[in-house]
Image 1: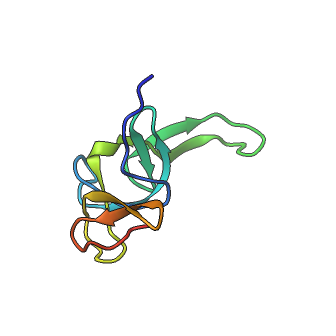
Image 2: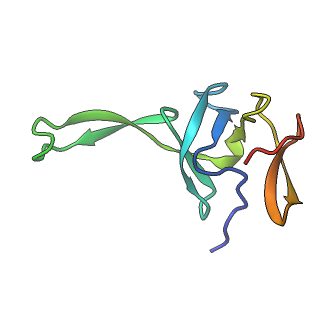
Length: 107
């Protein structure tokens, strides 16, 4: 399998670029590098039907966040607070992600 190159990591704050949640921001919960998809907290919600069990005796319908393609999200820089593209540089013998707008390190 071919893995897609993703510019997003777990814990990043991202802005949604398209779809029903366009313009909203959220925290990345999970990244699937193989499929090139990310799950963002409380965004792209889908209904899940739960069957009754010991923990949830009534069952019911809950909202859970679904995966969205990584090309539809953009990292929000913690320094300038804007959605930005990512540049990579080697600083002090380690790769660092850099904001293209303010040129400061994101990690």
